[in-house]
Length: 242
Image (tube, rainbow, N blue to C red; front, side, top):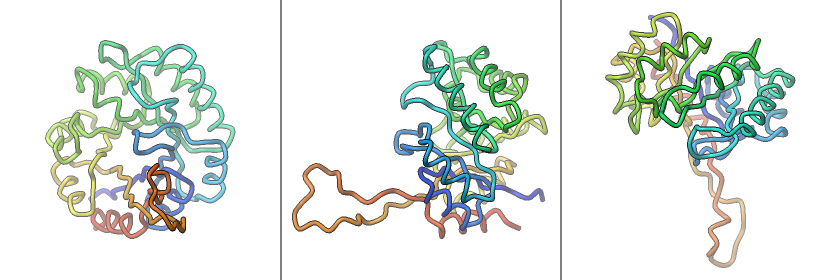
């Protein structure tokens, strides 16, 4: 059986280091994971790049919300891709759609060109396309190496049947990487059903607040951070390791 790989969506440098400690094969670094992720800060990128020995991919997304971008947003994303290249990152995670729900071919071609020398993953914007099969072919033609998808469902488990069809369609041309709702208790079955060899999970947990307060927190601003959990990463990796 082909060796499987776990990619962890890390919302901070600390989460990235936890992913590596737990045995992840790759990190996707982002910020604001609760909003679906946006591009992390320069300082976070530098710290993660200096401390990671596993591949580091960076989410290039200027804002939460849909994936139809205005010209100024595209320019900012191209600058962020160039910044990742300059810092020695291994790849970027991008995506753009048309208002009609198709892959934005022109914009994505610019992303792939700007990432020359880096790996390029198309993110879960794929789950909003009208025709996943045709869109997968578009990503192959554009030169993407990978697509992250839940099969268009709320979780990869719910979308397992479509994921299996996409994996079969992709063959060796592009990697179809299931993501969303993947846990130690379902990843092995998901691999069996889909025949996928790469998986994406955040493996996160809420840490207790470090603040010492003698009164209530009516603003809700003192909660502990969400961070990748080393033990969960280890359990995920163990579940897909022969």
